[in-house]
Image (cartoon, rainbow, N blue to C red):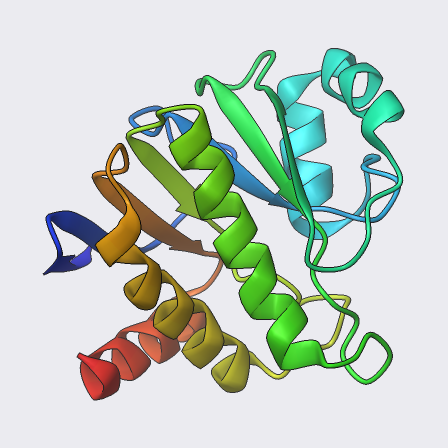
Length: 177
């Protein structure tokens, strides 16, 4: 696991399963607008959390690109799930600003709930088609910019699905720190 400390916050990069982060208070779901079970990250989180998560999400939907909402984690080993709707690349514009807004809004919700640790997937890089390296730069730069204003958060972890994805995150982190 690669770590960088910024403004008293540990920013971590690891390969793993976002739905299995027992040492983290809140995980972030790369959600769909209806906040329902889907493929990829949303499917993995909903399956692990159980049907109660979808029930709790129903009245919060739909959400717009860049927005985030928070629920309890149900059967997950965490306290909360923060659901972010990333932009569909080439359709939801401006994609870069909407993606940055996802990360910013998730961090703001974590602060509001006095959450000490949060884990993110690579939002919008799967079925939503955002090119991986530009999305990585947006994710890391946004989180790094926001660290100065965070009080409750002490750990921000990026949990990547593959070694290749983790390697790209690590390379980008080395470039911008």
